[in-house]
Each structure stands twice: as C-alpha cells, then as structure tokens.
Length: 54
Image (cartoon, rainbow, N blue to C red; front, side):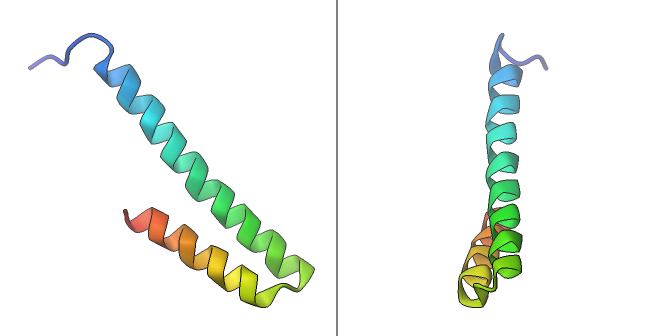
C-alpha cells in the first residue's frame, strides 16, 4: 500500500512539531528548576509528561 503524495512529508512535519513541543516543555521545566521556581518546574514537567503520553 502506498500513501498519497505528500502524506508522509506532512506526517513527518506534524511529528517534528510534537517532538519540539515536548522538548521545549522539558527544557523550560529544567530552567525553572535551576532558577529555583520549584512549583513552576513541577507544573511544566507535568505538562511535558502529558504531552509525551498523548
């Protein structure tokens, strides 16, 4: 079975966007932790984990 032209490229772009979002949340979580914003660190980390599960 072959995908319609452009579908694979579109899916790759969507996957890239999703992985970028997860990475951004994780990095921001670590930055908050380093700056001493523990509550914010935990909230952003929770969001990162939720994105990974979706």
